[in-house]
Image (spheres, rainbow, N blue to C red):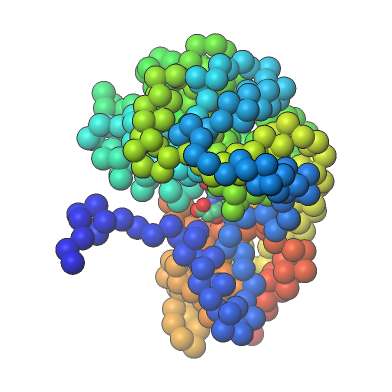
Length: 398
Ligand code: PMP
Ligand code: GLU
């Protein structure tokens, strides 16, 4: 059967593909350490699970409004207000089947053919593909590790054309873990205002932050910026609920009404039971969130120290999220028994085949000098995985 042009050009999600490959190797009895998945290893907190079970018993198992139930929208509004002192109306909240689905709908309803979307790199794998699927043009803005992987206002200004419609921000970042200070955000906001840009601010790692200063949401900057920003977040990372598939957008009600129409014609509502569970996630006790972050920080400190002690590897200490994105380009040009390392894909293949450690090649995030290692896995696996990487790389010097 002949596939559509779109389907032929579509790339698989590298993060999901590598996670699946590691799982498959494990099921074949191969002892692989999986550093691929950006998925907390903690169980969903019990109070959330109980809420879901109760909603099944109470028969909350039917269709809901395509953009989510009012109870969940109210819980999201209260959470944003408590966290950021910013107010939204129910019409300004859209609930989708994960933040990925929310972002997909956003690009679909905002982009016409050839509209340009500025995406600072390293970026999360799905942004450029989702923009392309919507017919838009991703404009990738590379940043350097030596400059902290931070995009500057003048760099943003330099790629703005009369076709530029959206700027995507993601902080703390997947894959670098880098975040912005309030002052940096204000400067970016000024550029957005001056050039009449829409900002999609993906703040899904807002709670997974290790620095002393709190996360500043882009919608906190001022009211005018709030009006031109669509805030994206969800339950996957903060509450360890990746499989439940609940994400949301907060922002302009006309945009959200269009997203509601799109969901109404495609997915319908996100799972009713997961919506109920998410009410409890946003409004119930929040102590488990802090406990998870403390554990992630221990892992971050350990993995960064160990990696930076390996010859030829250098990584920034991430401010948040649960990834490290070390530069491994020192190994380009080196040969081993089955091949030669020329780029990040070769390096990731080398680690998978020789060290039995699964990582994601940096090229998938727009930086071929790096690899992404997720430390959202047990300390036991982190220790073992790093040990394997170290031993294999040491063989280049023996
Ligand atoms: N944005 C970023 C930056 C992500 O890393 C992810 C994947 N974890 C998502 C959005 C999508 O998350 P989900 O669909 O699970 O809500
Ligand atoms: N976002 C996570 C990651 O980057 C999960 C996989 C995905 O949604 O692409 O690994």
